[in-house]
Amino acid sequence: MIVPSLLLFVMHCVVSCTSSGSPLLVRAALEPNTACASADEVEAGGAPRVCIDDGCLVGTLRDGMAGEQFEAFLGIPFAQPPVGELRFADPLPNGPWYEQLYNASYERDMCLQRNDLLPNPPVTGSEDCLYLNVYRPKECDDRTNLPVIVYIHGGGFFSGTASSLIVGPEYILDTKRAILVTVQYRLGVLGFLSTGDTAAPGNFGLKDQTLALRWVKRNIRRFGGNDQLITIVGQSAGATSVHMHMISPLSRGLFERAIMMSGNSLVPWNIPTKDPLALARSTAMVVDVMGADRLSGKQLVAALRDIPGEKLVGNVHKLKLWSVDPLTLFRPVVEPKDSPNPFLIEEPKVSWRNGNYQQVPYLAGFVPNEGAIRALSIFKDATLFGELQRNFSTILPILLEQPPSKALTEKMRTRFLNDTTDDEPVRQDNLQGFVDLYSEAAFIYPVQLGVRQYITAADTDRAPASVYKLSYKGRYSYSAIYAGGDTSDYGVVHCDDLNYLFRQPAIFPDYPAGAPELKMVDTFVNFFIDFAINGRATPLAPVRECRNENQVYQSLDCDVQEFVRVGDDVQVKVLNARNEEMFAFWKDFY
Image 1 (tube, one colour):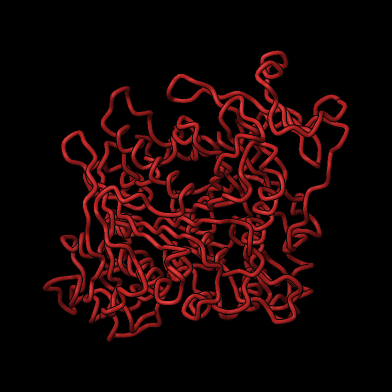
Image 2: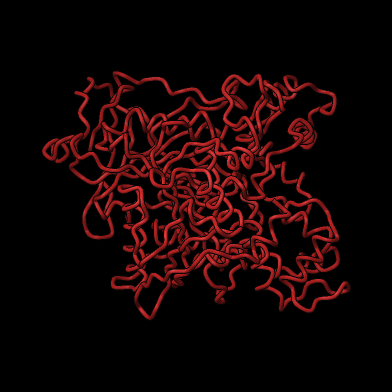
């Protein structure tokens, strides 16, 4: 496993080592608008070529894990670079290149970011980052009509990348059953700062995603994809994004299926910023904008556009309340009523509760120990753990993004932290209890609440909802990163499900030939692709679906397909998702 110090180096390489070469090659006449080059053309030219309305692209061939190649079109611009006057502005479509051949053989920079979950994180990436990657099986054409999976990366809206070093396409492309698109979007202060008025209405990162979805809808047939069979998939903040696209009026009709891994729009770290102007002014203050507390929204935007992006991204962590919390400082906002193209017009929880969303087949999933992402880094750091012990009633609400409340902390201790006292409200032997607390609060309860509210209002015959739980324990786990290099067994933690959907060579070694984990890869990848094709989760075991008529209990009352490991095999068990205790406990906090 790659531990954090080396991971930082690898993440640097994702940026620097893939950014050579010129995006525009020699002038060339436009090729006919065919979806794919023929096999003869690929062999003769040495690289695949596709022409879209904007111009022609030349891609590259990549080796799959099964010994066959697939085609990759990398670093395709879907928006104008969001720099200068386009910083803190809605994205604009990229212009055509017409008579030039676009070099889509290498990846572009990740979006400018500082990953606060890593030790001593550097500022990496570029503001010029609105690019996407398209991967397809070799020798396809416009008659192939493959389902399309668009993946939106996670990272708390402050970090992440579409790089194939982190989001490797090999497992999906080896099936030859789907086309994969991976997307980048603005992050952190650059993607989500808002002044609460039309000067900077906010949600720019989400609008980047919407523009990318429009690009896919318009162009994917040229790559051999079915533009009427687009599934958007996201993990963590990417899952929140997927849920937000179901809600947003801007994203209507741009996709036909939705898969959310470990997140949705109801998670506490997606609660809209209540006073975005105050946060924008505080942001200006930490980058030395004079008189920031007296500036209007328009003046703030003008001043912040003059600040180097690296300085902006590198200093906003000073606004955190404790350690790296709240993790997601800059986040979606409800846009002003006079905003010209609002992404979000009311709080997500209101839209979702009232049925104001696009009904599409919907698959939600989670892992058992989601909360390890934050719990391990606290419990493994003597300084942070000591501060949590001494200031439990102050820090816990910050972690859970709840108003300070003694009643809250007492209820949490009673349910999750056995036999603790006022003098010692949390102990080292409470690690699993704290993981469970954070798992339910930040992930599992909102995920299940979202499904329950959906099946109460939606037409589940036309747009069914399904739930899975990934409990399969493989040899590689993100827990070692969260725990500072400790490779002890902390169960299946946040992000571990990505090990079975994407190759991640910057983080984990490849599984050796014949490894039992490859059975899980095959099962999980095809589970997702089957859903993308059929709009229903394949019942790998007899399951009771999540349907309207099942609403006889207060909690979610349907079956969850749980992926588990038994020896070297993958088994799928069936769990009833009804959890009255969890729903009764958290309903007062959401």
